[in-house]
Image (cartoon, rainbow, N blue to C red; front, side, top):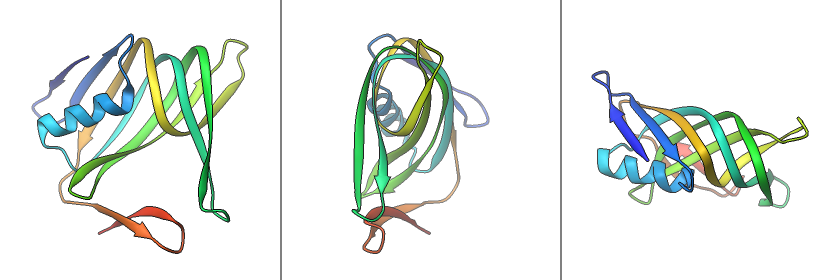
Length: 140
């Protein structure tokens, strides 16, 4: 992993084969003291754990995908939960047969690379458990 901070505050990130996406973003947010941001990216991966939320059961249904996949779209945000950065990301993955899978990102193992732009946002957004949805929702 390598990253550079631009004069406007934007952080350009290159993840390498074997880097885990969420852990890498959390590491950068910790080093750069980023607690509120948005990000987007493209690249490829060899393993992804994605999920969909069932609001009636208030639980995620997860699926692990393995093999060569294109990261067609990666979007998300960084907010604070329990005094630590929290990554909320969604992904669209292109499979080798040209079909697509996507959902909430739990884990993505990059291979061979992934390029992410992280844009810090002024202010503080906190996440707290929302009893109605069962999710850690944004509180302004």
